Structures are given as C-alpha cells and as structure tokens.
Length: 227
Image (cartoon, rainbow, N blue to C red; front, side, top):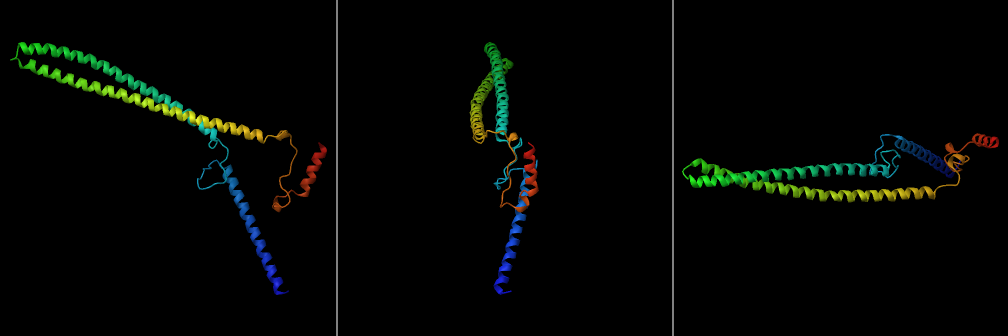
C-alpha cells in the first residue's frame, strides 16, 4: 500500500469519526431540547434564542395579557373605591370641624364680653385666649383636610392613566388574536388532519437510524390495501 493510499485511508477514518461525533452531539442536543420542551419547570432564558417555551398556560401570551388586564382592572377599581372612602372621611371631618368652629366662636363672643365686664377675673381672660388658640388650630386642621381632598383628586386623576394602559394592552391582544386567526386560516388545508393518510416523515439523506425501513413501508402498503 502506497503512502497516498495510507493518507487517504487516514483521512476517511477521521471524517467518519467527526461525522459520528457530530451525529452524537445532534442526538444529545435533540434529546436535551425535548426534555426542556416537555419539562414543567421550563423557564425562559434571555440569553437563549432556542428552543421556544412549551405552549402551556404559563407561556401563552394572550392568556397572560388577559390575566394582567383583568387583575389590573380589579385592583384599580378597589383602589378607586378606597380613594373615594378617604375623600368622604375628609369631607365628614371638615363638616365636624366647622361645627366645632362655630362653638368656639360662640365661646369667644361670650368670654370676650365677660372679660370686658370683669377685667379683674383672670379665668375669663385665660378661657378667652384658649378658645382663640383653638379657633386658630381648627383653621389649620381645615386647611389640611382640604389639601388632603385635593391630593385624593390628583390620585384619582392619575388612575385614569391605568385605564389607558389597560386599553393599550387590550388593543395588543386584539391584534395578536387577529394574527392568530389569520395564520390559522393561511395554513388551513381542505382535508382534516384526522382524515389524512400517513405521509412521509423521513426522506433519503436523513440520519440512517431515522429512515423508515422496508418492513414499515410494506406494512403501510398492506394497511392501505385493506382500506
């Protein structure tokens, strides 16, 4: 055997080893992908482009967006109700403070007359000053309550943006559903999949381990003949 024949034989062996190694890697990769797709613990990795997630409830996009809009609308409604209750509390407190203010004004009027008529009675002067200070504090409280009502209104106005965001998500959902119906219609066939005859899965040139054997072909022809 010449040197050229030996070199050709060596190259042939190396190519066979590379081919077998590549097939083993592809087989292992295919098994890993299958395990990932069938696993219930699948998690999307932003660094990996393939394989895509399995079509379970956790990864169905429209279902996820529907849940987001539903939960968002529910929580927004609850929050608006709470803000309305807070605004009512502020309004009721303001009414009560106005009633107290009238009482203190009446006390100031009475003790001012008493203090004017009996200037030597120290208690009249003290009570008059106490009522005047209380009236000043009531005005501050009323101002805080009014500011609180204003802030509640601002918060309720801000909640309107949440409704706009919900509408935007719903619009995206409608577009995705329209695309889904379009794709289904585009690839739809005249024959129902259940009524289709068996068709080729592997063709010549595929991995030898995956090509349909002659026995399988003969069995298929026999089944067709019985039909």
